Length: 411
Ligand code: AMP
Ligand code: GLY
Image (tube, rainbow, N blue to C red; front, side, top):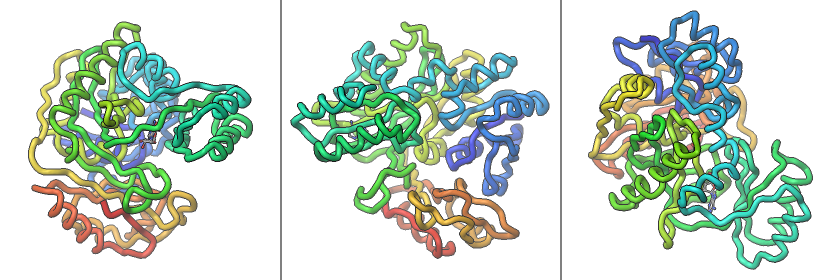
């Protein structure tokens, strides 16, 4: 069977690895040069070039396509593929608003009676300023409505900062949005819970946690994710069960009741506060970098799971229950503000000799070496019996690579 994965990062590499078998030929569009080392075929097509992707899927007789990133989903890639009679695993344009529009999701959460931060929406700067004038408690969270590549969320500490951010968003239109959400700041342990969803039926994955901050000790600016772990130490089985039954279940039931057809992966970003579990966000796709540490725990081939879901059947899904999967992202110097370009990262052989798995992201081949091709470069990851030995192995292996030009977080 030929399968097409859309995207180019470490998440897509992990999805491709989980699909690979002697019976499957896996293509990734556009993919990256690092994936080629694992036998993944890249198709040099941009993830938003729907016409070329459809033509490729038809020409190659692709059995089905999996969409990695949110932008093509929010732009309606699923509707487009289906209109051409092609099978695709992901939510359609309407359902993808769950990630594309925070206010759309907040209304669904209210309908589903699922706890989330209290919030207010504003289109008008003056109205937002008036609201902030009457606000007594800080920090508060200000979010741009719509996709802002993970950058549209600000935790602000006082009124002056709130005004500056609000003005940047509503007066200067820093992101392509005409609306902001101002919401209550939630404090607690964050965790991510993903599920395969098939129109009302859902199959939860193990909980994972990503590390968003740039610096050690949970400090610095937010990034696209510096590493991830699965399962999550501080999340007990009963918290996990509550997250499944009190968040995923009612939310997915509400989608069905509202006639919002949803097939694909649903990602819940959750926080365990002293008042219980609350939703921070929903995404309409596999999380990155959580997927890199969750999918290796899937004991079945991912292609059987997705194929069975697309056929409307109940997939057989078994998860590894012991040990830990840890992944650490290496980023290029200067990331996220000014990532240096075309930095030499060492020979491909030095990567192939590591005693850990690697999922590649922003790398490109230059002769027998890799150069940087983006901010976040690759994830070094492995499965181990416990956190301590797993961490030790990863950092020991990471040190075998050329150290110049890269950095990582000590998770
Ligand atoms: P989002 O894009 O909504 O997922 O937000 C990105 C990150 O900002 C989250 O993973 C949290 O770490 C943080 N965040 C978002 N909303 C809140 C909130 N209401 N309270 C505390 N932290 C938040
Ligand atoms: N790890 C957060 C996300 O995938 O959006």
